[in-house]
Length: 104
Ligand SMILES: [Zn+2]
Image (cartoon, rainbow, N blue to C red; front, side, top):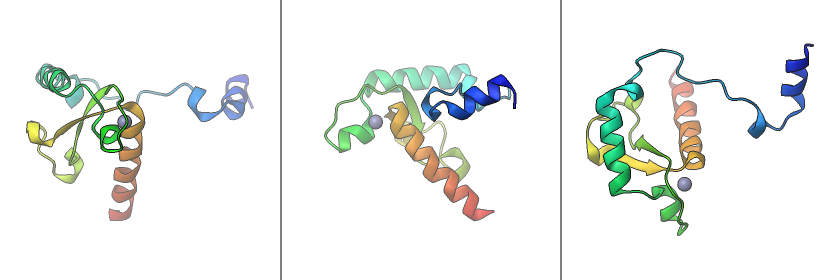
């Protein structure tokens, strides 16, 4: 076991360096059009929607598709967008991944 593997093994997951999920360049999220749209959305809805539902005020960090693109969600429809914080987004992605898994 190399030193890096060893450190990775003992560190709690939060501190582990996260590899970028999108390895492809020019992914959808890099598109100028998306950046503009998400920026505008965050201006209109700066707080995390999921946290707000639970009565917690959290600054949102990203714009999420309510219905994921993989699930046929409309990617340019602002009605399909919501602001989320990192944690809520991760929780949501977990659910989406599990559904993707079940479909296979
Ligand atoms: Zn949140």
